[in-house]
Image (cartoon, rainbow, N blue to C red; front, side, top):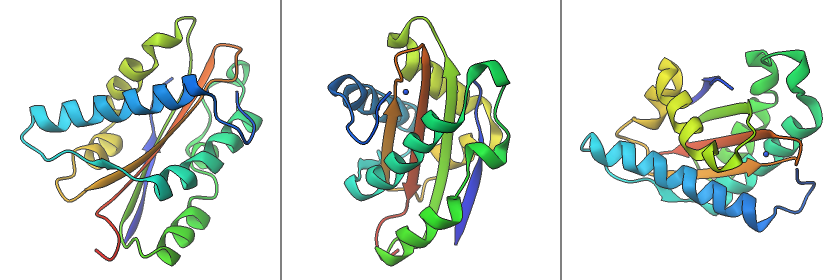
Length: 161
C-alpha cells in the first residue's frame, strides 16, 4: 500500500548535496523522532535508500518551484510520487508515505523547526509522521542559496513489511 501525503506550508544543490544540507536533513529527522518519542512512539531510523529517492525529488523541486509563484499545488509538490513508489517497491519497501515542505526563510537555521511544525499542522503529514507502523525515513533538504528551502521525507514500515 502506498499513500501520497499532502504538502505542508511554507533547500541549492544540483546532484551534490552540501554538508549544510546533510546536517539540516539530520536535524529534521531528529525533530521527527523528538515528536514521535513525546507521543510514546518508536523512533524512525535513517534509511539511505529512501533518502536517495527523496533526493531526486528535492532536485526536481529546486528546479521547478519558485516562491514568487505562490505555494505549489499538491500535484507539483508530489510530482512523480508513483515513480518513487515503484522504485521503492523494487527495493522491497511495501508501504511508503511522503511529506514535503517548501518554504522561504531568511534564517535557514529555523528550517528543521519550521518543517516539523508545518508537518504536524497538516493532518495528512501528521498521520504519516506519527504513524506507529513507520520504522524508517529518508530525508532530503535542499537549500538553493536564495532563501528557499525544500525538505522531502519518505517514511516506510521497512523493507519486506
